[in-house]
Amino acid sequence: MSTQQLIIFFLLTIINLCVFLPPQIKLLRAENLSVEEVNSALLSRYQKRYPDIIGPQFKIKILEDATLSKVFPEVDFYEVTLFIDLPPAKEVVFNKQKEVFFFPLEFNRLINEEAKSFDDQRILDVAFAFCKLSDPPAIPYIELSDQKIEHINEAMTTVCFSTYSKLGGIREKWEINLLYNQISKGLETIVGKNEGDFMDTPFYDYDKSFRSLNYPKYYLPKVY
Image (cartoon, rainbow, N blue to C red):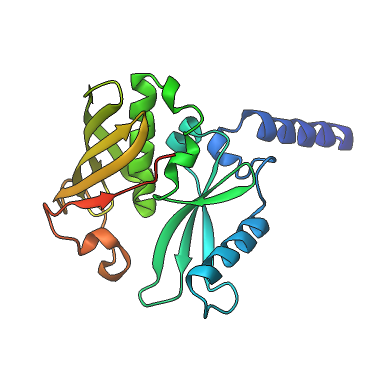
C-alpha cells in the first residue's frame, strides 16, 4: 500500500470513529465540562461536606451505557469513589450544561424542564435509568422485566418493574413514584441473590452483597 493510500485509509478511519461510533463511546460532550473541570467542581463541593478534606481524596470514572446515552444524550455520568472512610464510599454525579449534580438528590435536574411533556415510554425509560444509576457496578448487567405504569391522578404516577443483574445474581423489585413526571420517591427491594448464571462479587466492595433480602431502600430526589 502506497503512502498516499495509507493517508487516505487513516483519514477514513478517523471519520468513521467520529461519525459512526455509538453515543456511549463518545465520552465527553463538547458543551459539558472536561474531566479536570468536573474534578475541580467536585473538590469544591466535597470540601463543604468534609471541611477537613485535603486535596482530591476521590477518583472519578466515566460511566458508559447505551441506555443512559439514549435517555440522556447530552449528559455525562461519573462514578465517584471517595477515600474518606473505609471501605471507600461510592456515589454517582452527572455533568449537564457545565454544572455538576449529585444522584439521587438532584436527579430531577436532568428532566425538570421537559417532564410535563413525557409520554408513558419516556416515563419508563427515565425510571429504568434511575434504577441503573443507583447501582453503578451493575449498570452493564441490569435487565428489566414486568414493567407496569399506573396514573393515579393528573399529578401522580407509579412505575413498577423487576430487574435481574448478573453481578451477584441480584433480583429486585422497584416502585418509583412520580409527581408531575419528576421522580419523588424510589423504593428498591432485593428479593433474591446468587440466582441464575451469576458473577461473584467481593463482599466488602459491593453494597448489595451485604444488604438484607426484602428490606427496602428508599431514594428521595428533590422535586423542582
